[in-house]
Image 1 (cartoon, rainbow, N blue to C red):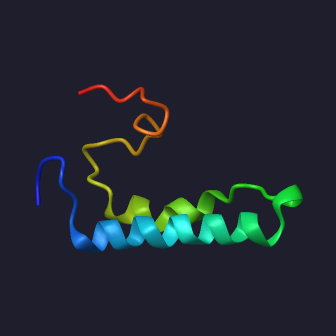
Image 2: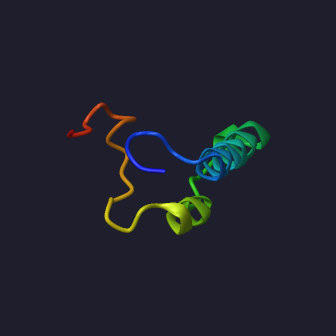
Length: 63
């Protein structure tokens, strides 16, 4: 699949990573720390020609 749309597998993987992050925060908000490995599964599916960024989250995406 090309363009702005992502595959079902990619979307499921992203949601699973979000879930891990949310669960970790809810379990211990005071000691929460982001774990870089939560992004590993996403990076495996990411198009190698496109950098994985936080641009959309911070509204810095360049189209």
